[in-house]
Image (cartoon, rainbow, N blue to C red; front, side, top):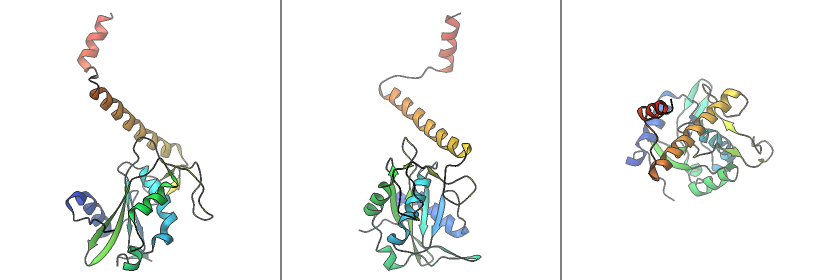
Amino acid sequence: MALPTTDMPGHRALHERVQAALDTCVESQSIDFKESADVATLQYKLIRTAMAMANLRDGGVIVIGAGERGETWDLTGIRDEDLNSYNVDELTDAINRYASPPIAVELVLHYREGSRFLAVQVREFGDTPIVCRRDGPPGAGLKQGVLYVRPAGVARTSEVRSAEDMQDLLNLAAEKRARSILETARRIGMQPPTPARRFDDELEGL
């Protein structure tokens, strides 16, 4: 299956996001680098990271083909034999065997200075934060019932361990719920009262 590239019009924002990450060689809450490896080798790391990034506002991107070498970065890209092991449908199915509700994932190729990188773009959750639905095999770091996050200011995936991490998730979910309610109200012809109308209504009650 041919993969889209970040220089296509529909992926312009992703192109800029990946290019900036590779130019600075800086991982972040929403950017994670993985060395070139086949999907079987990275599978559980990708699943865990994807669940955490889906719990972020605007999601995140995993860039495969960048490896840290002590104090330097090796940006040689993803090897052909490793790239050939990736299929968007199979990877999405593998992730969603563990993610509840399902996560939307895209695989997009990014070219930089003669090297090719695989960008795994993870969309933020729709209405409900992502929970791990089942235990993974020993050593996979996947536990049933756990919410995974990327804490602010650090480039790592962890379980929710603080009230601050949980509050960020709850705030994002509440915003989505509020937008959904307003959209439903508009669709059925209801309009929320304006501040002036609410003031008039309050005066009438006096």
